[in-house]
Length: 111
Image (cartoon, rainbow, N blue to C red):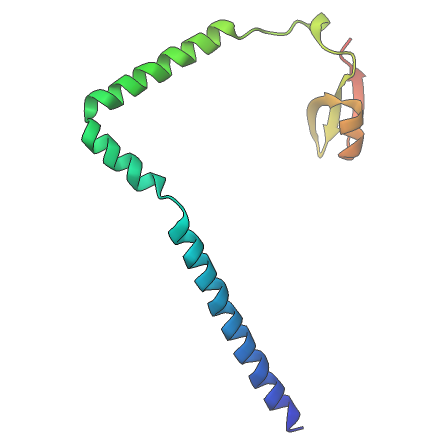
């Protein structure tokens, strides 16, 4: 009967000690990681609002170029291995093998 309190005390000491060690390791790793959030904010403050406007314009141009290149797929252009797949009450489109591996029910093929 006297062993139970000793065992409980040992377990509590080990659990407390291991938690501190894990927290220390996490703190060390966090100190080694670069802090990109602070760096980005400092760079923005130094660059000013003109740099932010230039980045926004570049992003808008890139977005417009992507939409110019984007195309739609006609029904005849789909691969024949793509099927509709009924998974958890929703219909998704994927290869027949992927559908079966996820526990879905394959439906009609795309062709």
